[in-house]
Length: 112
Length: 111
Image (cartoon, chains in turn green, orange):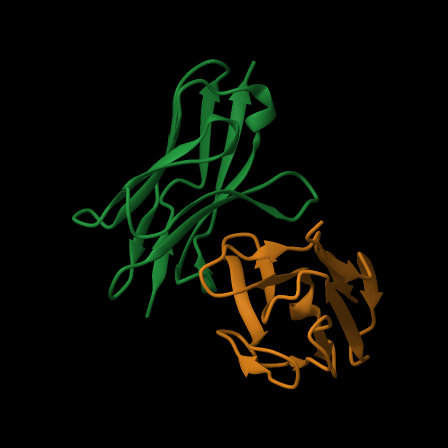
């Protein structure tokens, strides 16, 4: 069965600092991978998606992620965090975008 | 503009009562999903559908039924609501090869 592990329930970074949120997946075959962001009392919004191809994918608002088959990872990165990035981030794995399996999420707190 | 609309946005129900959560999508997507979100669990799949007339069990279907009467509409039904079903419920729609689009969520409290 497919699964996603986000090992960090909470991450705190200073505004302007770089960010990495970790995601490890388990999937038999070639996965489709996603990062979604959830702002308070809102639904999930897509940040970026990986479809088999270039391992580094660019998303909205300066976010990017790198797929690693050897490490079964899909970590999210941003070079310089803004206070508006304060949110919960979810990593998900699926078969071609069908029936996503989510991790437990990482809450990002930004120190001003 | 692509959209997934859930109603109601907030619901308070009594234990043992029947609750229906509704979802409408204007994206002409074949696939629709119901998830619940709980702290420490992320989002978990309850039911999903390939298209009008079809419903399938997800990972945590017990205590829930689903109905897909048309391409646009997908309902989640709690026949006998229990306090353990207090949660935030999200509907999503999508197609093969696409990232699903999520609604704003329904906050359900069962007292």
